[in-house]
Amino acid sequence: MSKQQITRRSLVKCFAVVASVSLARSSESEPEVTIVEFNDAGEKIGPARVKKVLHTEAEWRKLLTLQQFYVTRKGTSDLAYYGTYFKLRDAGLYRCVCCGSAVFSSQTKFDSPSGYACFSAVIAEENIRTYVDMAEEPKRVDVICKRCDAHLGYEYNDGPEPTHLRFAINESAVKFIPLKKSAPGG
Ligand SMILES: [Zn+2]
Image (cartoon, rainbow, N blue to C red; front, top):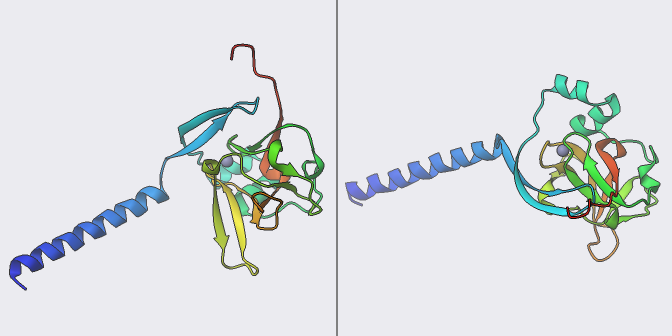
């Protein structure tokens, strides 16, 4: 191997390391995300590049009730049959309680004996991310709001057809917006 080859190789390696470090940094502290926006009539507005909603723990404590804070920011769960959403059948949207992103729709909600509001699909894949909690056994899939990192609930694979998914969502993590008819012409 010539000296020139070695230099080129180590240079390429060096660039690769720099590139991967900057990629990792940008995804960790990415200040913007792409989500799909919906109006309160449940109509899809379309994808939008939005700023992430970031607050300190002290700020979240002020903005949320204690129950909302522990569920969304600390990853705890409401007790089963808490509140009214688990049995709610009204048409409307469920928005993240922390940032207002639309996360679920009554269109995919189904009655579940679990005591949680259960959905067979997310309103838009872009609006959430999932995370497999390897520390828990059996492994649980956390459902997290992409815009503000709120813990919303868990995803299971025992849902109805066609997705066979069941998103069990904490009432304290979402706010139900009853369906409103959109204004004429808009
Ligand atoms: Zn959110």
